[in-house]
Image (cartoon, rainbow, N blue to C red; front, side, top):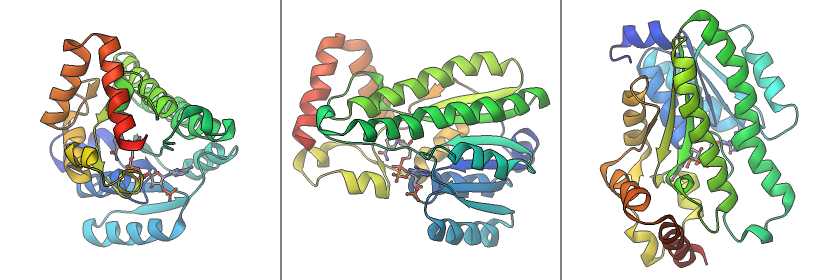
Length: 269
Ligand SMILES: NC(=O)c1ccc[n+]([C@@H]2O[C@H](COP(=O)([O-])OP(=O)(O)OC[C@H]3O[C@@H](n4cnc5c(N)ncnc54)[C@H](OP(=O)(O)O)[C@@H]3O)[C@@H](O)[C@H]2O)c1
């Protein structure tokens, strides 16, 4: 675990990579890591917001940046990313990029589900495997994978997205133990609703939606960075922790899944 800027650069520097950084949680990660003295590679599909963010990070925090416009769902996406990182010493990876398809499972074409699998699971698997090797050989580093409260049980209308988020949590938790012994801190972020452009675009302004507690991206990122190196997974926000404990520990699984299904029907059905 690191607290001071010196500890951050020593433990996770000199370069951090944030995949999915053009806005929302990814942009907040990039800013928080640059504030801790790390040089940052930011990756997403849209070049323009990435370049604006890179310029802001350099001027606000005096760090080096590299903006890579790559589609991480494309077949050559991961190879391009790894090749563009080959001259850098990467000490921290945040896999934040995700595709979240909302709606009835059968109404989404299979191609959409496969793209979701690519961005949310297959691409991070390949990048964690590659960068994880280097970090383990070096004996230090960190990896953060983004899960979600929706992945703590089956969740209707985001059934496949939720399954990919469960996958991220379970992978990160296993690696926390396995790579932890080799000096690499791995963390799963089990975030609840977070105020990002992606969340705003996908959430209706209904009465049900107004009841969902929403955190700022900056608050979520600060909790996650504090948890890195201390625990295998973290649920940012006290209200989210209560909701998760209620669903996972107090309710029978069948009731929890039905409650989530009813909530999703109210929001998106
Ligand atoms: N917001 C929430 O309420 C919430 C809750 C729980 C978990 N999470 C998790 O937190 C993470 C970030 O969420 P967010 O709300 O900040 O998402 P977002 O606003 O949709 O941002 C996602 C980022 O990923 C990039 N991205 C998406 N597809 C990509 C692709 N194919 N290739 C490269 N980059 C891609 C996007 O940039 P481009 O469009 O420029 O490519 C963007 O920078 C996700 O993993 C999500 O599952 C979010």
